[in-house]
Amino acid sequence: MGYNQIAGHEDVIGLLRLAMNRQRLAHGYIFEGVPGCGKRLVARELAKALLCEAGLDEGCGHCQSCLKFETQNHPDYLEVEPDGKSVKVEQIEALQSFVMVKPYSGARKVVVVDEAQTMTPSAQNRLLKMIEEPPSYATLIFVTAQADALLPTILSRCQIVSFSRLKPEVIESWLIQTHGVEAGIARIASNFADGSISRALMLATSEVFTQTRQDALDIIGALMRRDPLDGLLKLQKYGADKVLATSLIELMIIWYRDLSALWVDPNSIKIFSQDKRSELVDLLGRTQKSPWLDCLEILEQTARALDGNANTSLAMHAMALKIQEVIHDNSRRGPV
Image (cartoon, rainbow, N blue to C red; front, top):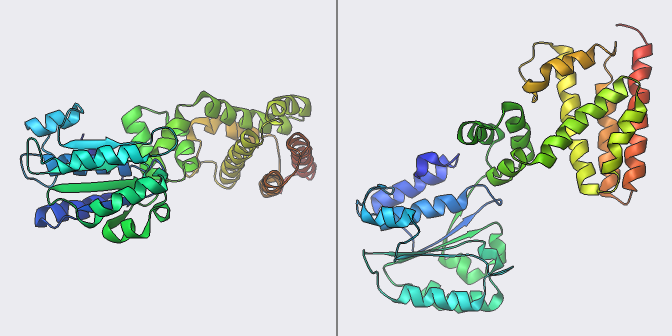
């Protein structure tokens, strides 16, 4: 792997390359960003570059050091992950022992601490002396989704590198090109992922997510066909799970936005669900006016109710009946 295989973060990677070329690297870094945005991948690539024998601004991928790194067998690289729910003081003691022994095969040693925000207070305190007086050959990289969970001394002694949320179009392209995800699913998953590429991949390959997306469209179709029983039957399995019900509502909102876009322009290329265009166009033929804004308002009201203490089953049932009433009230008004 290389930097060019990491989705997005060109700004961060550019700064790290520049620091490598100018030999102005810090002894400690804090990589912060939302979970799953790719910061750990960048940390590993920086570690590989620091250990590489070629002396370039990224790992060459061919020297003995890079080959050992890729096989997770490099004697001068250590990666620390939470043991259970936290990084414990014993792990930090092992880290210190590793760092205090001079490099085995090159000029540097590199440590990556993943989910650094989970370090216990005693673990963080144990790190302080090493952070304040690191060996000249050592580089420590702390990867975290919550930098403010680290002690002020650690924050002040490390260079903080912030990773932005990845744009949906970047994630969408990566899902399609790297994992062969179908375009419609990739677009929806990337917009649900909140800038996290790992969350997008999880959603795109989740049977539950795919089924919920289809259920959302089926429910909309049932309500537009004046078949509330079918719609309510599909809603039943969401009535007992507020999280799943919220996901269903979010997906229904996307479907209704697509219907609204196609109502204005049947050839619109701006819809999320290009893979379901023909089904959406067919649904449009079942109404003579545009009830989409009213439907969206009902969905948003239901989402707000679920955020409170509303009964999930009753709220979803009421939502379906209101949407059906709005749709068929609009249908009775005749063409515009």
